[in-house]
Image 1: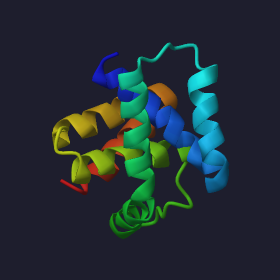
Image 2 (image 1 turned 90 degrees about the vertical axis):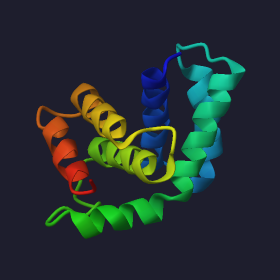
Image 3 (image 1 turned 30 degrees about the vertical axis):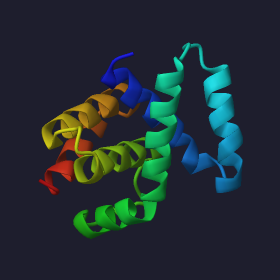
Length: 132
């Protein structure tokens, strides 16, 4: 599985945070890997889970960054898809040395186009541009 596919899977798992209590997430993670049509290698499962956990540990920080830089758009007003994508991208931009900033932004825009609404790609791009 390539990095783009791995990132998409991390996004799909991270998206569940918006709809489940923290104590429900271990079961959600188990269900994510059991119910998904994709067969994951042990290495892929470990990579997705570890990156998901690192992002979740930084959610408060990431949300504060978003609130500080987006005028009129606090995280409570953002769509869940866009918020999840922004959290993933900001994590990669600020905490993942393996992902260049430009790649993080491009991949976030592509995720927004795939999973969001018609304007999601431009919204995500505009928000992330404030962090460059």
